[in-house]
Image 1 (cartoon, rainbow, N blue to C red):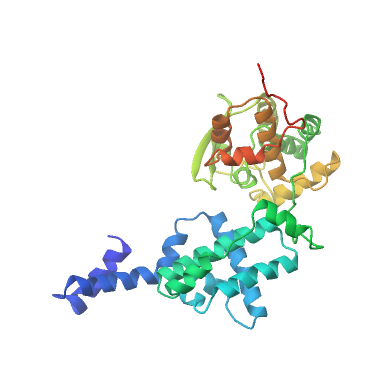
Image 2 (spheres, rainbow, N blue to C red):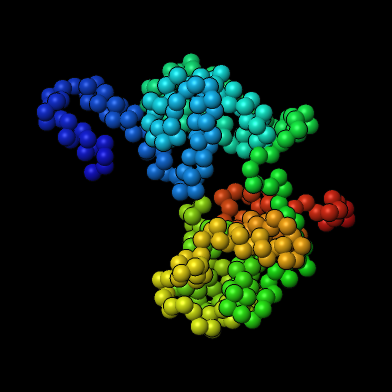
Length: 342
């Protein structure tokens, strides 16, 4: 029995036994409206919800500056917290972000979040149809429009996120995969192989268990939380060598259910620790600001330039559409390279 059925079962004996379907339907509608945010969020990954909380946090800050008190948690959980929100406030939020120097891409993403929550507030009966229609009509910026706007403002990026990925070449990748024969060096070698040869996301590496490695078959099975998908990769030669070196040495503990990579005090190596380590290793080879995501860009670019079919690249990278690997792969330095005219 689901929540709605349970709620109606509890209500029917004392309140609506013998009543007509309109009254029962009204109760069901009220229940659905009160749970609209929760039902939507249950469908989303933890990463999506974290990003939405950050988006709503900035919107809460903006509302506060306008003299309106709305907590982040209320905006995230309670449709009634959206009462009084108008298209003018949403438009103002966009303009305020431009003044603060936020990137166009980030502004567009936050607008999408605000419109989504307004949609569910409308569904809950908090925002009327006219107000919601005007909010839906608020537009973000297309690429060319964003470029034109950026030319007129002095500061176009707030926060640590880079405007473009750090570009690696094959020489960089070889250096990043070679490390001293020490415990930390063997760990770093395997870490960089998984990033550069397999394009794993930082969170996917942080979640790896020792039990997910099949040394005899040379396979790694792992979970992609972002797309809710379990995948198996055949390990490259470099990754296999790094893996055998890493696992054939004494570990802090032998626990198949434990992490493949250990952090401090025997705990799982966190995503923050992986980001920090990759940044340090990048700096050693002259790549300032290198991140795990830059390695994923490199992997997609190299695979694309070596004529990997886009469908294969999409599957291997755990993307839900072919648009993403095309976006990740860097354009060729010579634009018409690979164009065959006969």
